[in-house]
Amino acid sequence: MKERERQLILDYECLHSMPGGLREVRVWWDTVLETWLVGKRIDLSEVQDGADLVEPRVMEMIDHPNVVKVRAVATVAGFPAPMRVVEMIMPYYERGSISDALEGGMRFTAAQSLRIIQAALQGLAEMHERYGILHRDVKSPNLFLTGDAQTVKIGDLGLAGAMDSSGTAPCVYAPHLYAPPELLTGDGLTRSSDLYSLGIVLRELLGGQFDYAAYSTTDVVDSLLAGQSPLRDKDLCLPVWVCRSLRKIVQKATAPDPSRRFQTAREMSAQIARIRSADWQEVTPEVWEAPFLRYPDMRIRVSTAPAKGGGITLITQKRKTVAWRRVSPDVSVASLTHQQAFAVFERANSLAVS
Image (cartoon, rainbow, N blue to C red):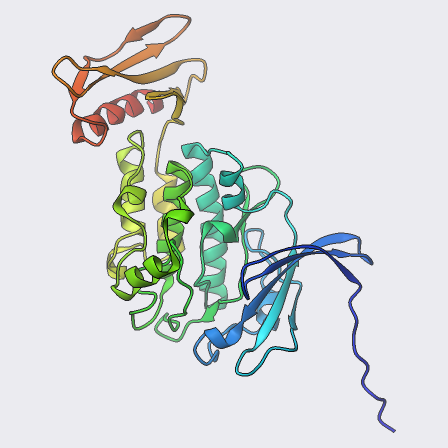
């Protein structure tokens, strides 16, 4: 006689939840293994017919230091058709995501930002090249910090999609500030779509957290339906201290035309590895300092002062012991967005990394 099937009950205790519609996140305590877990609910019916969604068994196979391990995927009963709600169970990282860190006041230097992006690129390369999977939902809230501030894991694979033989996966309805312009209007998403979103994360690491409250869902969807970035120009701008080679990385990664972006994670990673940038920090309003790369006790500083005829004067100084001394002529510019202002920081950066 066939043994009757028995329902499996997991001994989890829900500590708290963070509401977000059907993207609600629950923090669980596994009383048996005595460990924290995170569960994120997703309605699979939002992803067209769901035929391209990655099977849970494939998610569980991904074992990479820069990808969050999926522990289980459970069906959540009680939702009306055609909804198909699942909860993905993943490890809990106490430090939280990049968004959590920024919200808590943490600021990242250029070196820290690039290490984080390099780590994320390693994770994307594993997903793209070994498993043929696009993430399709890369954003700061889905990049989790572990250990120190430079270690990151890509999480939330609920919208990951399998690529076809041409390297394309169907578009998915996941509008947010990091989404590529082709998300809702393109013929499909490619590796460059994930890399676009990671380029936006790099911009946020360098320039500070976006003002999420300034963007409504309608604003974001309308921009994507027009094939445009949801971010306004002022939020796409980089700080004045960002060196030319790093600007080119961000500009290429976030190009509106997918064919003009990086085409693989390894290509983008190789370009980042060549960058030599000083770790600039704004120590007081409109005063930036950075240590020399080879001589950490030496510092370089760029500060502003009002110009006689209007605008500002940029002053570049170097400190070897106690006193600061000018190392180049002062430059007067209309504003920090002027090309000459970028040139001042480019020269200062060259001194610091030489």
